[in-house]
Image (cartoon, rainbow, N blue to C red; front, side, top):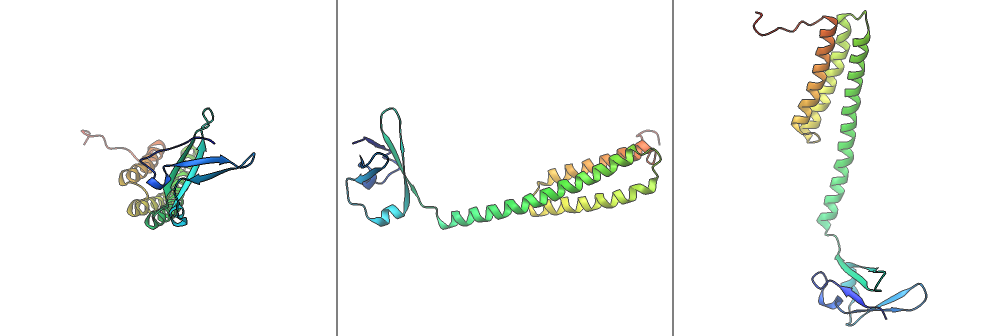
Length: 172
């Protein structure tokens, strides 16, 4: 017969005295010192784990998840999938804008009219970012940082090609 160790704080008094008897080579049966109804066992989960050196078995009875917790987990998973799709769309749009700006920057004979199509892409990216902020997928500062990054890259391309001349303070 093996000794059983249980945490007295976590277990009801009915679970405190347990005995473990080996019935065959691989299986072991668990018996309780008191009569425990089936309803007590169905309200929770009883897990056993054996400590190798001493042959001591540690058991825990965990309560069944409450219905509200199950619903919360279901809602959280739904939001996670929804937010993942939104964030993916933001990354895709941002990457497309940055790639287009980089191509325009490397193009030696670029015209100022070519930036119009990129501005349209930037507007769509701004819209997606703003919607993500509105529904709570992104923090408002994160959204502002991402929009700012796009605007700075666009401004850098315009300066590089000479389409925009920054006004210096004190020169006017």
